[in-house]
Image (cartoon, rainbow, N blue to C red; front, side):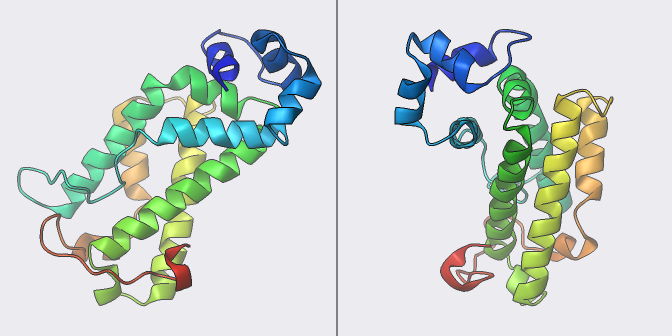
Length: 195
């Protein structure tokens, strides 16, 4: 994984099993002794990079006026800044041979984080579990698609404008969620607590 992270810092380098094995000083069979596939490595790289992101939307950082809209915007802007700061990793991962798998994995991670945040801040007091799940799925995939297109250059806009687009992908009912520190509810949107 260190070799893959190192390669992601080299502009124009294609992440594939051969280049990663070469960078690690091993052969391709050694690569496959550690990872089942390039897709598995790409997903692990994404998980490692995404681990640094705080929860999405309505996190512990409320805006000065305490509104969930501003807190959610703050968190989405923090996500955009995180992606920009780790741009080379995201470009390498999303542009790798396993780029399509990386986009789906990114969407699923975001979907889970949105579902958790929605439930934590009272979504089940506002809407039914199916709506929570459907919203988390739609928002997670929309945010992942916008971020991926932006990071590979298919969407040309500033960080602020991208944040505006991300905020617009959040449905109006979420504006009624509790602000951080106003209490939580421990129920999950689906059995087992996972979307």
